[in-house]
Each structure stands twice: as C-alpha cells, then as structure tokens.
Amino acid sequence: MEQDQSLMNSNNAPAQLTFLCHMVNPSPSLFKMEFILSYNISTQKIEVVERDKNRKWRAGKSFVPCTSAKKLSERDFVPGRIVQLSQWKFYLIEGDEVTTEYLKEKALKEGRDFDHELSTNQNQF
Image (cartoon, rainbow, N blue to C red):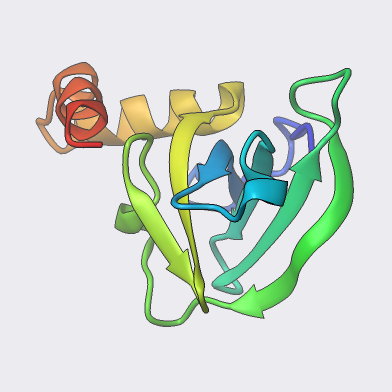
C-alpha cells in the first residue's frame, strides 16, 4: 500500500488517500486487528485490507474489496474521523506519509490549521 510520489493527479493530489484504521465496535475476533483503508480520489472507490503484522503500511488479506464510495468525499478522509462502509465503521488513526503531507498542504492552502483539526478529531473518539 506504499504510495509512489509520482502517482499524483493534475491537482497535485495523490491517486489515493491511505490510512491506518481500526474497526469501531468490532466483534471479538476482529478486536485487535488493524486495517489499511485506501480511498481512490478519481474513482471514489474504497478498499480495506488487513494490515500486515510485520510492516505497518504493507497490505495483508482483503477485508472489504474495492467498493463504491460515491456518498463520501475527500473531506471525509481525515485522521480521527469514522468512515462507514456497509455494516462496518472504521476509525481513521493516521495517514501514510504521502496522505498526511497532502492533507497538510491542502489545509494550509485553504487557511485551515491541520494539526488543530487533527487533535480535535482525535479527541472526539
């Protein structure tokens, strides 16, 4: 799931936003699992995979195959937020390096304080 910096679109956005996340109110069998959620900006599709146990940003088995996220927008994908896919809710813990840099730059261009928003979002959970 590691992103290549060259995979930027014309708006200087990465092709996808990638987050480490965990499930909200998981069943006991999923309690300690971490996942990687990827949101493809241009296709508005989401994929959730199990996180590899040995490497933080390496994908394991598919959990939610690529699915449409037309009801969501890029603004829904910020660390500290909860994203619902079907019956599952995922708490976005942190973005990978490319995602975090993109979100910081975007907030700066829009006159927002990304670090303040991040701490506010994370305090709500």
